[in-house]
Image (cartoon, rainbow, N blue to C red; front, top):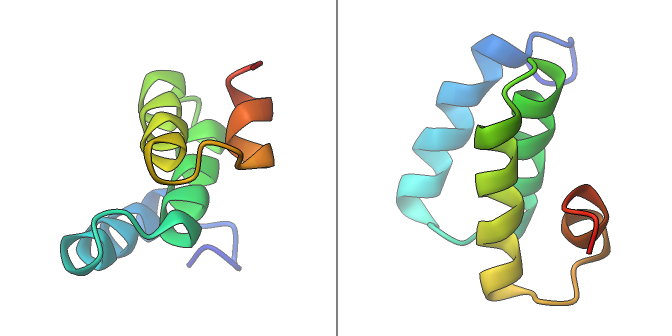
Length: 67
């Protein structure tokens, strides 16, 4: 769904994947991008912050949070 720009449909799949690997930064990045494209800024920011807990130097998460 993500590749077809169906971001709203993709989010539940990312949430399911995160149940298996809570801090999978790649999944969090994709989920954050979906929320951002859906205008869900707070949810996107939560994803970026979760990424930084695991990978404090993650360039995309830092950029999205203006750090």
